[in-house]
Length: 394
Image 1 (cartoon, rainbow, N blue to C red):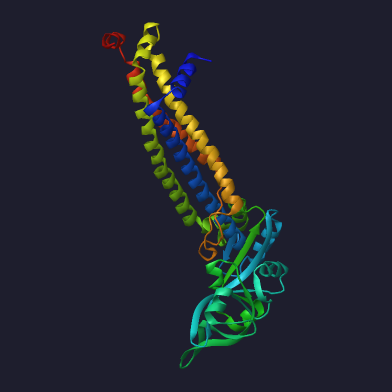
Image 2 (cartoon, helix red, strand yellow; image 1 turned 90 degrees about the vertical axis):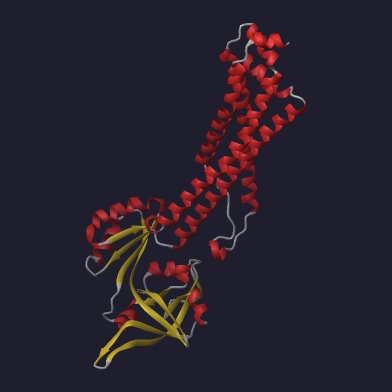
């Protein structure tokens, strides 16, 4: 065992009275701060991960927009050839209004052939009532209108029919064939599925946009697949990934997480003041030891290293203990689902804690750096103590 370590351990474990209390408070301050930072960032990361999973389970991974029927078959060929594509659904989307009694609401009508096998698989995951007949409404829309499967509802085209006396709204009654629920507000309260044949008969030449929703095997490769598809299709179509569609949300969450990290790091700054106070007390207590060390030939740099090592030892042990306890608490949070939230608001019933390695490393680095800085000034003061002055006082 080196001389530095022997002296550091002796000063640390043979402390008494106020010095022992300050040693414990210095350790506990770093421990608690690191634990709080890692656990908070872990819960924040868990929320982000769960939010991404919910988005990916309910939204397409790529959306291809085509403003005319040109190259519609070409899109089908390209997607069928792409190995990373699991399946895709092609819709013609119209804007319309639903009306029942005195209630009227704008909706997006997604027209698709109900006999499409992929659509059958897709919609059955979300259907809560009925089947693929007539209009398939989101649960939110059904609740707003008070509709059940088998009820009739009026569909109104915003373009209407031109007559010599003006534009007459195009209105037709349709039966509610099914109700679906995804947990996503923009679908459950705004989307209606309709058979393509019925939609063409009703909307005729009304303005509609061709959308192809693409689902790929690995959603996190969406940007790579997007570039491949864009290269094949050229500039006539618009291709966007789920990352593009949700970029403002994820950018905001990352910025919040970064701000949260620096705010919580202030806890370590406050805790590091305890180390500074402790070392100043230690320097005052051990002034005779310093004089003896220097009398036997110890250099200033070596004295500095002893007190610097003492501060870093407290900071390191406290930080590592904080990391371990954070992992233990995260296990209990995940195992017993301790952080419960409203599913209607957050799209999840509880928030897990996902501790990321980069967050742990950043926190450890910050704690050790602050421990070093807080130990440096007292250590420099100890190294500058003069033997003659100390002996004269004695």
